Amino acid sequence: MAGRSSSSSSSSFRLLDLVRPFVPLLPEVREPDGRRVPFRRKLACTAAALFAFLACSQLPLYGLHRAAAAGGGADPFYWVRAILASNRGTVMELGITPVVTAGTLVQLLVGSNLVRADSSNPDDRALLSAAQKLLSIVITAGEATAYVLSGAYGSVGVLGAGNAVLVVLQLVLGGMVAIFLDELLQKGYGFGSGISLFTAANTCEGVVTRALSPATMDRGRGAEFVGAVTAAAHLLATRASKLSAVREAFFRGGGGGGLPDLRGLAATCAVFLAAVYLQGVRVALPVRPRNAPRSHRGGAYSVRLLYTSGMPVVLLSSAVSSLYLVSQALYRRFGGSLLVDLLGKWTPDAAVPVGGIAYYVTAPASAASAAANPLHAAMYVAFVLAACAALSRAWVVVSGSSSRDVARRLREQQMVMPGMREASMQRELERYIPAAAALGCVCVGALTVAADLMGAVGSGAGMLLAVTTVYQCYEAFEKEKTY
Image 1 (cartoon, rainbow, N blue to C red):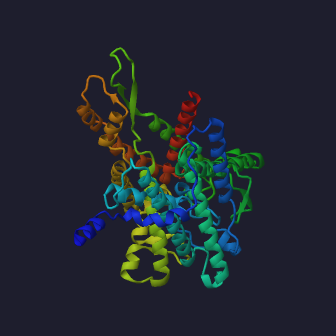
Image 2: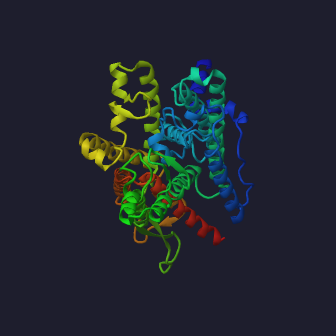
Image 3: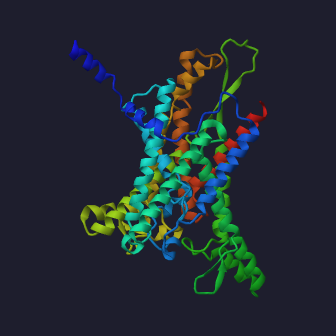
């Protein structure tokens, strides 16, 4: 009997229960107390969360040398900053990377049944939320430590042990601010999720800054305005030859890595319009309440072309940034080793990959660079499209948005499709959802590649997320007005 009881108790043990002792220790945003959060309060909380995040994105890290703070050191997140909502040399250096990584890991573990949890059980939902928060904090601390030790701000010996610890603490605090701002919005106090909202805000801020910034930079030809529109107005006002002024305003960036120009701004507008168009493509499947009369008009369940939105690219960017971080740290210490060089070879300042896997998963600097090295361009395009397809398929399953999950939710809401039995709803959804997920991820990947090669200000995925987020907020505004 004793053996049987011990066997029973061991079989009832779950990995999720390991989180239970930490639940009382974790700070938490309380759920709204049973009442609907008023529209104005939601609007105020959303604006306050955005302001706090953007303020932290402009707050420089204390304890850095001036060159490192300005970006003189290695920058593992340089290529993916727009999507990860991070800002170089600031408290929000890590952006949303810890939140995205922790959320993805938890969903993968639950979706693969490695962690058993019942989403209908409030206790299990609370444990899953605590597990994700705890994992986010651990990842934040780990990435902050690895970031400093990898030499992102220069050698630790030059930085000093005290300053190194201080920088790590600031990065951890910045990461925790992002975690709790995201939780504030997720709990219903605001509109949308923090991940998409912060990415959209960071993308829009970057586009506006690079278009209109009055700051100046000296590249050996005298002071030049950083903003593309500001520089174009200055050139037209000061140059005797207007044709020369227009030519420089359009091509001063050199196709990548230089100052923003009107060509990049035009490419940004083209990518933005393409994202707006793709966001509007959808199929509306008619649904109505089960017991409604046949004359009832009912509603529609929309399957968008961008079914998974930009999440596959966000997940891909998070994974690639982690690859950069690991590759840089290893190459700095063990450069020359076959396996380390296979993972990635870097320039002497460890800021740009020049070989290995890290090089081929990095976008070419411009269309001219892609033409000069077609193998790199082809490998990058193939990698982005294949990775987006795989991540999109996995995200549909683990996020509970597969055909089976949607059909189950419709049944739970007592909704049916006119002229179909309940058992046929899943088959009808399977005609559209897998196709939308597959084709949508190809569109997202193609838009990302096109934005990178055309030299757009910001990334295609960032602009796509910005468009999607703004549209979702608009839908939420309209829905709130009906109450």
